[in-house]
Structure formats: structure tokens, C-alpha cells
Image (cartoon, rainbow, N blue to C red; front, top):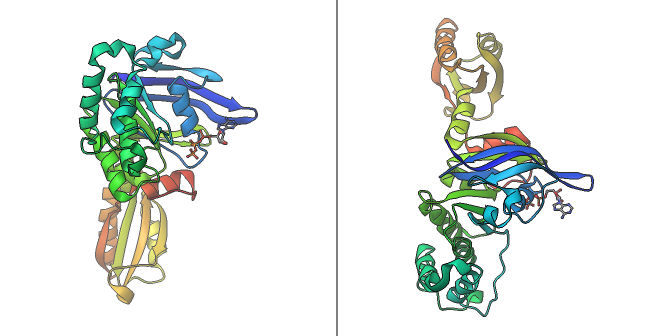
Length: 320
Ligand code: ATP
């Protein structure tokens, strides 16, 4: 696995506030990597440092093999879209991209061709010659991504690209990110868990400037799901929770409110030690037999990223 972005001990202090605190992270080449955290977790500060717009207090950053100390050579493979991009409203989308292409003298006579290619890539062919003040939120974000893609950067940094968009706008931005999967590494910040689940193959969770975890999204969801069983039993008594808790490998039992069969069944969330789900399921079947109960279900819960996130970070302000 080669890392498109390699961060080691990255720290940024603003006075006594450590916005980013010893962050070590590898973003593999070709990944769509969601950088997830609540408001104020340190996402924007991290992205600005990777983009070369803010100087770290400590630590090192490499992008596409270049150290952040290298200046222009470091910034060349990077495209960056800030959190709330502003455009001159009187310009058309095409003019915005031409203007942005002006900062890439290496394009020379290829600039207009590159602008045409990007207009098509971000799906703005119909609107390219309209004033961008008339664009929807999703169109503006796609225009911003188009501008960030000028010069074909290897790494695209996007700060909250889908925040504040309506569902159609969000889908159009996520679809665009998805379409770049093969060609560009995308590292993007978000606090929208659903977006991460939909588009990111990897996710890092940050809280108060510190990294809580970095994993493949699918592995994260699976590892959490496998340690919790949803158990529903007919004929349970007041003893049943204790009987379940006594099964080897069970680390906790919680009675749940809802069950599929109303009054006649009781539902429990049973947490189990690593790799214990299968033996505990078998033991529940035996317990049900010996205690005269019927098992409606005893299966690993499917958790979504929101539940995983809330368990990791606690109940903070997060959009699902
Ligand atoms: P949001 O989702 O709200 O954009 P974030 O995760 O991007 O939040 P940052 O904007 O990186 O978080 O901020 C991290 C912390 O650093 C916050 O406590 C913020 O107040 C502080 N901070 C950020 N920039 C500055 C600055 N220029 N001066 C002082 N403190 C700052």
C-alpha cells in the first residue's frame, strides 16, 4: 500500500488550543478517505496544513512523496476546495474555471481544452455559460471541485464538500467524487456520516484534534456489529438477563424496549468478547431449550456508522 498522504505527529496550536494534536495518518493512493469529526474537531485545520496554507506547530506531512518543506513542488500534486468557496457571481462557470486555470501557467495553450474537459467532468455543460450566482449549491460545489482539479492533481482535498446541500445536490457531489475514484486520491472532511458510508472506502475519526481510529469503512462497521447480538426470546422470565450474562464470552446484557412480537417476546442486546459471537449464539440456543424458551432471533446487529461514531465520540452534534 503506497500512501498518497503521509502525516506524522501533526500538531497545530492556536495559543493554548491544540486544534490538531499529534495526528499520524496514512491515506492510501486511490482511496476516498473520509475525515470525520464533530464541529471543532480539527478537520479544517488539518486540511489547511496538508494544502500548505497553514504551517504545522510540529510534525511532518508528505504528499505524493514530497515533504511540505519543499514549497512549490509540494503543492503541485494537490487540489484543494475550501469549506465555503466564493466565486465572482457575475462570472459564468466557464469563466471561473478559466480564471482558476490562469494560476497554472504550465497549461499554456492547453488551458481552454482543460476547462472544457472539466466542465464535462463535473457535469456543468448545460450551465457553463450562465452566471454562477444562479447556480444551485450542488452546482457551485461541483464548480469548486472542477477548479480544484485543474492541473490534474494526484490528491484532492475537500473540506465538507456536501455540507449544507439538499439531497439532490449532495448526491451530485458524491457521484462526482465516486467518478474520480480510479484517478484521484480524495481526502475529505465531513460530519455527515451517511456520506462516509455511501462513498468512502476508508474513514478516520478525529475528536479534539486527536485521531480515534483509521480503518476501512466496511471493516469498522463489521467489527462493531460482530460484537453485539440482538436476541429475542419467547417465554423469557425476570431471570433471563442474568442467565444470558452468565454465558461464557458475554460481556454485557441490556434489555431492549422493542421486540418484533409485542408482549410475548423479550429483546436483549448482548455484547460479546471478540470472536465469541458464534459460540454465544449456540449457547443461547441451548439456554432457551433448557429454560423452556423459544429463540425468535439471536444474530449480530447491523450497526450503521452513526451508531459506531456515537459510541466512539459520545453524543455530540452530528448529522445522520
Ligand atoms: P467545523 O466542522 O466546525 O468546521 P473543524 O473540525 O473543521 O470544525 P477546526 O476549524 O479545524 O475544526 O477548529 C479546531 C479548533 O481550533 C477549534 O477549537 C477552533 O476554534 C480552533 N481554531 C481554528 N482556527 C483557529 C484560529 N485561527 N485561531 C484560533 N483558534 C482556531
